[in-house]
Amino acid sequence: MKSKHNIIHNKKKIYNDPIYGFISIPMDIIFDIIEHPFFQRLRRINQLGLTHMVYPGALHTRFQHVIGSMHLMTKAVSTIRKKGHEITKEEEEGVLISILLHDIGHGPFSHALEYDIVCNINHESISKYFIKQLSIEFDGKLDLALDIFNNKYKKKFLHQLISGQLDMDRMDYLNRDSYYTGVSEGKIGSDRIIDMINVINGKLVIEEKGIYSVEKFIVARRVMYWQVYMHKTVVVCEFMLIHILRRAKYLIQSGSNLYGNPALLFFMKENINEKNFIEDASILEKFSRLDDFDILGAIKVWQFHEDFILSDLSRRIINRDLLKIQISKNKFKKEMVDKIRKKIKSKYNLTEKETNFFIYSDTLKNNAYNESKQNINILMKSGEIVDLSKASDNLNISALSKPVEKYFLCYPNL
Image (cartoon, rainbow, N blue to C red; front, side):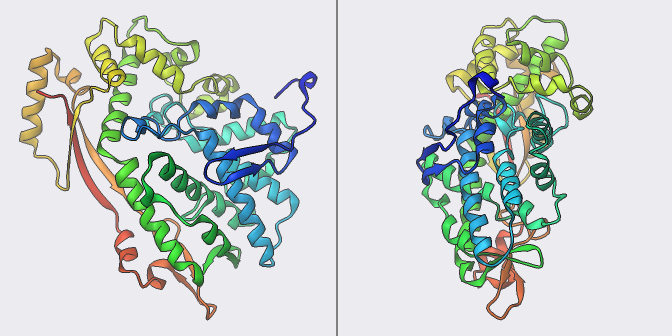
């Protein structure tokens, strides 16, 4: 937090956002949280990681996304109140803070390195630790936000607005990512969907009039996953980045001296897990010093390292000399993969284990609408509540509720 000598009295600031126009900061505490160094770090984390390697405009940040999500939340709260449901001033503050901080636990390059900077701990868990720490600094004023974030508050629909099939997070990122990538098929009618939100028996529903907007939302999400988030070049970039970090970590833990800022080197030397975050508050502080710039700055230097694997992969990312990638609806035959592995091993004079840094094979899954996880309920004019897949006359919705799997294989040109 800012020192008392730097207190800013005028906290009624406005952001000019390319998606929504002017966004007002609704409360003083929101302004103070945004000013905190933990939050300002989000300016230095790209929303879409290395997607700009495919879509050059995709350089927007997590900071922009969470401000936009908060803006949509103010509209959702207003809509729900207009329909006769009570949301107190304290609950409004809690849900706005919760959506504002829902992504604060993202590390450098977000999802790509989620399990490589730290071990087996996702960004939601780290967000929870950030909110806890901020609540201590703000004299307990974020406790309600933490309860809503953890789905421990009695009004469950508040958590659904943050994390659900039709939450404000998804509403913002689809429109924002669509805008910055130029993939117009991802644009959704967020205003119309929010206007159709209601609460029945403590849970969110969408009024029947909004069903076509929801259908478009589901289809847009599917398009964005295959065309942007799981674009084959984005996939190969992310897997190369993961293997660069893994190689660097291996070398550092084997005694090599590698360039990196102190926070990055700490996480490279230590295998930090959730238990460490719980027991040592200083680890969260160290994590808060990491952003995309640290990783890219290190990779720029690592491309000249004497280790062939680290230097070659780093150079490829810096110069966009990427590995090849093949996508298939069927698993790649073992004989084919083994043949490619053998060529890579021979060409680069690698051991069997080292060859794994140059050939990756995995699955891509896209489930545009997951009925089993948390369905979208439609409030029919008759008063009946029906699942979207049954209420919709669009046959695509039933099809989109089934997960789609594809297989990929990455390797160098041989």
